[in-house]
Image 1 (cartoon, one colour):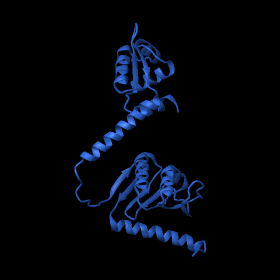
Image 2: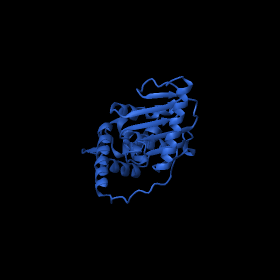
Image 3: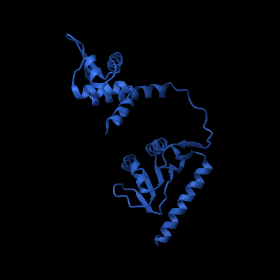
Image 4: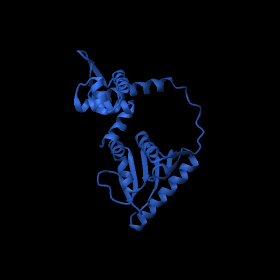
Length: 235
């Protein structure tokens, strides 16, 4: 991973860009004073000291007193684990405090961009109670391999319509034509996501739990499976 991507990844854990830059500097050089951090990174002294104070406040650095205060990074595994643990605790607090939802009246929601679509599919697979059906090219199936493997291990049924054999998944697989950017997911005969994926921010999928749409989409996928079986001469 290059330096810019590493800095952006550290920023996902609550660090500013300057804090992440100095955190990397401490990782490479060990304990440093604020003056040394500024000199190594090219960040102004005032901004370097502000960033170092931020690192200490966020649990990413320790201070060591001496003739001059020196800063030492907290081990990255420890720092990240602490952040994840704190977020998990916050998640439970939020779940417990959120007001109860009104009865859901299902409409049709649009999920835009590859990142959000990928997250939605992963959550659908992880949240499925009994079964899931996926229709997409094998390169996209690979993005959800971890979640699918876990679901299959938990004895949830996984059926996949795709263009190539899947070597690492013990799922019921039907080989079909190249679906290009089209994807479809059904979980527990209750939720559907369908649309385009693989076009970056231009990707968009429809997500719904509307019973009539789910039934129509499920019937369409079932008919596709029947056609594949007939073409193979299967019963």
